[in-house]
Image (cartoon, rainbow, N blue to C red; front, top):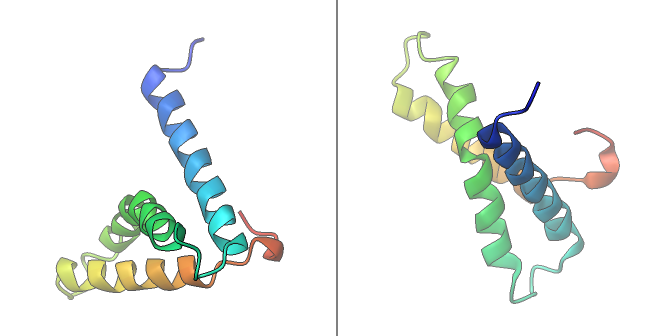
Length: 88
């Protein structure tokens, strides 16, 4: 059975985001590429943060507030990511 092209493309995008995240951790914050790479990684994972936030939408809080907290958590996760920790 063939894998749909869209799924294959998404897999490549995820792999590129993981590699960019690993590159970001090896890079100095003074590097001219740092901010652009950081923004790329955050942008790539925003849909996942939104997905997680929507799982909590029926808890009595505004979805926009939950999304904002999810985005903040995403930024903190990217900034504090440790590839040596051993988690995917």
